[in-house]
Amino acid sequence: MKKNKKIPLLILAVLAVLAFLAFLLSYYVSQEIRNQLENNAGNSFSYENLDVDLLRKRIDLTGFEFNRNGTSISSAEIKLKGFNYFQYLVNDKIIINELIIFKPVYRINKASQKDENDNSGREDFNRSIRINKTEVKNGTFAVRENDSAQNIVFIRVPHLSIKRTELDSASVREMIPFRYSSYSAVSDSIRLHINTEQYLTVEHLEVQSGKTSVENFKILPYYGKSEFDQRIPYEKDRIALGVEKIHLEDLFLTFQNDTLLLKSPFIKVTGGNLEIYRNKLLPDDERVKSLYSKKLRESPVKLDFPLIEIIRTTIVYEEKTAEDRPPGTVEFGKIEGEITNLTNLDLQREDFPATVISAKALYMNASPVSMDWQFRVPNVIDKFSFSGRFEEVGSREINSFLKPSMNMEAEGGLKKVYFTFSGNSNTATGDVQVDYDQFKLNVLRSDGSQKNKLLSAIVNLFVENEGISKEATFNDVEFSRDKTKSFWNFMWKGVKKGVIEELGQL
Image 1 (cartoon, rainbow, N blue to C red):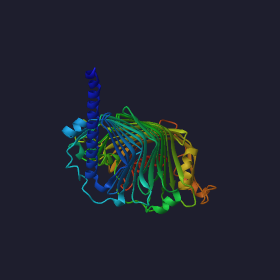
Image 2 (image 1 turned 60 degrees about the horizontal axis):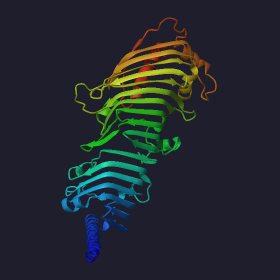
Image 3 (image 1 turned 30 degrees about the vertical axis):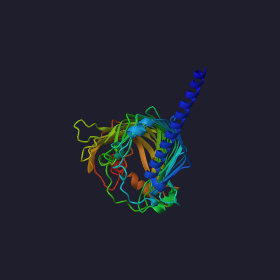
Image 4 (image 1 turned 30 degrees about the horizontal axis):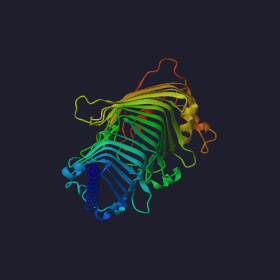
């Protein structure tokens, strides 16, 4: 009987010893973690409470704050689940089954940053860290120029999940200092300062199973048209872009030798609206403009997008040419198109594909228009081909731009305009076909209300008004590029020359 009583007492004693050892081990691990945090962060780091639960393999950290060199990181609570104490104490490895970060706030103040070696601390890093699952809940990230300035970057992330994160002495030297197997994320607010004239916003971004969805993407101007004109030193486009939805399949983002690489096999852009305004009364921008092939060839960002599909998009261009008249307007609505092989990777390969852009739309929401454009990014003289057609362009569609920009008014219309050009960064040649009927141009009085009969009569002496009753012939054109103007100015120059020559050397 006495023997039986000793067994429970022995068990209790063993349990008490184990509990005491567990307490000591928990205390040791807790102190070790505190020492590591303080040694690595010093006075830059603080926290409210650190709780180590050896039996449940959990570590809880509350009231976390870190401040150094213009960088501030805080979190309401950090939970580590499934912490492998044996690997940590014996092999100096950190293995965690799950890391949960609640309400983290990551701020960067650029004015407070000092010049330090970006790799400071990285060369000495010799740990191995693996986290099977990381979750961030209700986090924010912000960058500002100084304490009194607005954020130049702001991102709010309700949820972020990363699987199998690994960090070691090799990965820590890379631009992205860790490896991962997959991730998913949701952001409900993104705002990014682009330059002194524009900023970018995104209402909703979601990444799930390799698919990225962006909703209400916008690039907006800071200023209205009048103030914009007062702030710029020369002619410049004021751009406002809105896109209802952007879908990207298997978006891949990484850095190669400090160069950003973006890849996606398929991108779909739906419901775009691009508004461009330009004041032609301002001084010209005399800088040389590169063609798109050269821009891609010399871009600091590497791209690989085999197929981009564009659906239900509108482009509106306004051009101000006189103080006393409203801007002339050109609109392309219901744009449907696709871009294939938009890439600048491996420019030296022999089978480098041509970039091809094809689109169709309604000009002024009435006249069908289409275009096909092709170029090869590696070609150093920027060879390209460009063709298109306008159909049934009536006087209303012509006058929306002609009347405010040139104080002229058209009667009749253009039945068809076909054009095909090939060229390079210097010149282009091609042919233009114009099919029209009883086309007249009226020069308006200075107030734009009535036509100036004398000037209109003189102008129409040079316009053949009998129309084309037979099949029209193509007119050969050759034209040079003004390198201070855009590619679109280059192409419009060829179309305009072909149309004018067909209308009788007007």
